[in-house]
Structure formats: C-alpha cells, structure tokens
Image (cartoon, rainbow over all chains, first blue to last red; front, side, top):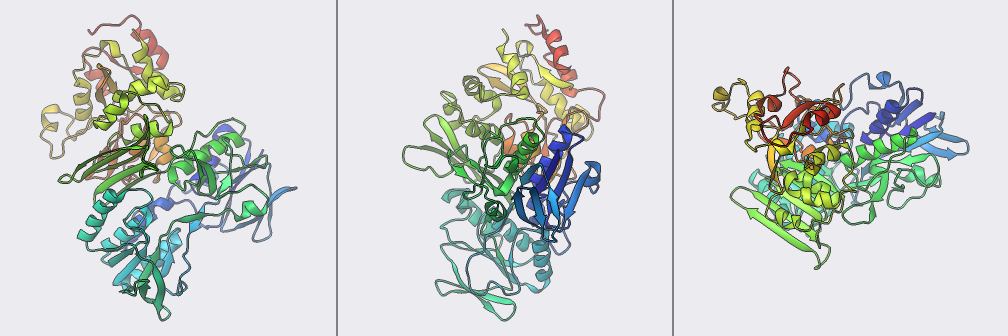
Length: 431
Length: 157
C-alpha cells in the first residue's frame, strides 16, 4: 500500500507511526512545507528567550530512517488529484498514493489592520516565527500581544520573562474568553498585572503605526500603545484550501466520518484541519488541539493500514500554566442556557477555583485552577456523556477520584470499554 | 504485559502500598530518611473508596494511552515492554496528561514542573507496592497469572 501524508505535526506523525506499527511493507511518504518539521509546535513558546530556551524536538533525529518513511521536506503540496490519485508539490513533482492523509494543520488568523506588514509584526505558529520574535527581542523594550487566549498568554509570559514590558490587547471582556469564564479570566488578569503586564479589554487595534518597523498601535478608543514588537495571536484557521479545490467536502474544516475518512474514498483528514463532532456540544467543529490531533492521526493511520478504528469524538480541552498557577478547562465552560446547572467553588486565599457545568445529570464542562488532580477522570465523564445519577453530588462536593465515579462508569459500562477499564473493574465485579 | 493488579476483596485499606511507593520514589529509599527529606516523596498509587470498598489504583499502562496522545513534548511514551513511562528530561509540566488520564493517576510536581506516575519500579527488582502490601491484595504479573492467583482469595491474610 502506498500511503502519503501531508503534514508532519502530531496528526501526521501519529498516523505514520501507527501505519508502520501495523504494516512493515507499506510505503509511507510525509510531505511538509517546513524543512525541519520534527518539533513540537506547542513547545515553541518555551523558546521565547534570548538564550534559545529548551530543546523542542518531538521525535529523534533518525525518525524517518528508523520508520522507513520517505521525507519530502521544505516542499508544499499544492494540488490533490483523485484520478490519477496523486499529490503535486510546488516543485512540480507528482507523488502517487493509494491512501492519503491530509493533516495540513492551520495558520494564524490575521486580522485586517492597516500596517500589518511592518517589521516587528509577527503571527505565532512556527519556529521561524519564534526565531523572528527572538531576533527582535534585544531591540524591543515594549511589546503588544493581540489576543488573550492560551497562545497569546504564553507568548506574553515568555516576553515578560525576557524582560519586555507587555500590553495584552483583547476584544473580549476577559482573558481566555474561549476557554474560561469571567472569574477564571479575572484570576489570570490579576496575575499578569501583578507581574507587570497591562491587560486592555474590550479593545481592537485600528492601526499599526511607525516607519518600516512598528512603533505603536492605535486602539479604536484613540489610545496609543508604544511597542517595538506586536505579536498576533488570534487563533488559527484550518488549511483546507487544497482539499476544497480537490472537491473534498469541507465545512469550517475538512469533514470526516468516524474513521477519519473524508467524503472521498481512501482520503483521510486529521488534526487542526479536520472537522469532527465535539462531545460536549454535539456539534461539528474544528478542535485545533494537540491531544485531538494525535488521537485523530492514530485512528486515521490505523484505518489507512486496514485495521478499522473509530474516533469517538473530539473535545475542546486545554491545560495551561502561567506564573506557576495551573488551569485545566474542558468542554462547555459557559452554560449555553439557563437550563444548565453550574456549581462553583472558590478559595481566593489559596488561588483555587473549580467550576462544573451540567446538562441534567451529564457533566458538559469544567474549569479547575490551582488544584487540577483528577481532572482527567472528569474529562472522561464529559467525553463519554455519562449519566451520573448520584455521582453528580460527589463531584459537586469536590470528590472527583476515579473510585468515587465508579458507579457512573458501571451504569454506562458500554461506553467505558477497553482493556484498562476491564482490568480495573474486574476486581469490583467479584464477590 | 506484566502489570500491577489488585484484589479488592482482600485489601484492608491500610495504605501500606502508598507508603512503600513514596519511599521507593524518595532520595534515600528509606522510610525514616524519606519523611525528613526536604521535599517529601509522592506516592503514585492511591487507595480510594469505591462505594465504601477500598480501591488501590495506579497507572493502568493503557494500550492506546490518552496521556501519550496528549503529551506535547514527547515525554510520555511506551517502553519496549508496553509500559507507559515519562522521560523526566523532556517533561515541561504542561499537565495535558493530567487533563486526559481517565483514572486520575497522574500526580503533579508544581515546583519541578514534572508529571509523576507509576513507573512499575523499572529501576528496581521489586514492585514496592506489591512487596509493601501485607495482605497480598496487590499482584504483579500477567493477567492470567493474577486470575489464577486471586482464585478463592476473598479474605485478607
């Protein structure tokens, strides 16, 4: 079988590893527009220092050789053809395939602001973006970060630790508006302020000003903020164009079925480019998140290699830590309507916050700040949409250990399948 | 693969496994030293209460481990034996594994920024929790061996 993978992020790598673990004979080729793609994109913010920061390689140097994968690096896939089944690269090369995985990821969303092309205005996605920022660091006393999501705040804290004075500019009323509520956003706003940043809420940049290099941004309010560096962190858009042009069905992302296959037989999609059903909302969406990408890649790879596997659902989930305070946020953290129940616990002295959102007796969202133990137990309850019965009261009381939720797992036993559950629950079934 | 299994019927909920695990993962590996170490060692097995019955739980070393999918640094990985292990050098303390572990058996070290979990005592000949269990409720071996071993054992001792 000739397997071709476009994209060398977590989805592409997981797919390649899975295919190779199933078949030694399949030919595998990976196409990446990056020359050195074997790094972890999520670790890039850790490199935001003058000294270069930590090692962010994600797989060993001889990954391709060891797994007998043909790497086609530094070249962009520009067209997919279904007859003949082939991918065309920007240098004209034709790569034939029997099965294809489109794991083209996303790119930073760029707002339409005059002055976006000035030096020192940078989106944040690749190692080269990071290197550019690091290059500007010595000549940047102040920086502005547009966007207060997980990436924006990681960039902001990185710049702050490099000694740059940072202004975080956000459109929403509070930080982390996509993944947290007002209380949680407020907790982190307090922490960022205490560490020297300014958080400007409810604002948009109307123009980026300066000479060739950015010198300041002007807000819609008329206020001007001095900055020698402006980082745009307004989320990512999926790179679906190549699929759409090939006639593959797309919504916001490339639409896939439970086997991660698109509407064209033998062509799969996974990762930040794929549109899947979200467990908490039941709606189709692009959850551009590392854990979703690797799992989707693994499942796509298995199906591509002929071992059928189904993807359960994706789930919006984030784990972050800023200035030593960890937060985990999963599912729908802002109740969609008044029929949903919300339970919050807060200990301001210890910087602990916990929020649970229920739809009747199903947990659909959580925020945990400060104390994050057992978060995964609750994540699994959200993902499996498990009816909780009495266990709901345990969770509300803050008892979240696996042993405390076993009753709910037993009631929904068909959804909690697999060797690990079987072995763990086997002991309970006895006697 | 060889794993740690647990017999609920003969567990006395004494938490000796927790102590043995913490000591094994201490600097000195001696109880009387470990409790005085600057940073107290953390156990990777915990005894919980499942509907009033004790349940000792540690990493299940899942075949399709969600923690490995979620790990963005490549620290969490499968060893050659199939065990799920953390490469401490690579762990950045992002807590993605904590977010997805359905058994809640990954602890966090906020100071060192590393995730902590059962490593099956890879560096030792013995499994600390198994050896430390006075009732024989914790077993290390293949699943079939455990089933044979657990047959008819329904009381502590």
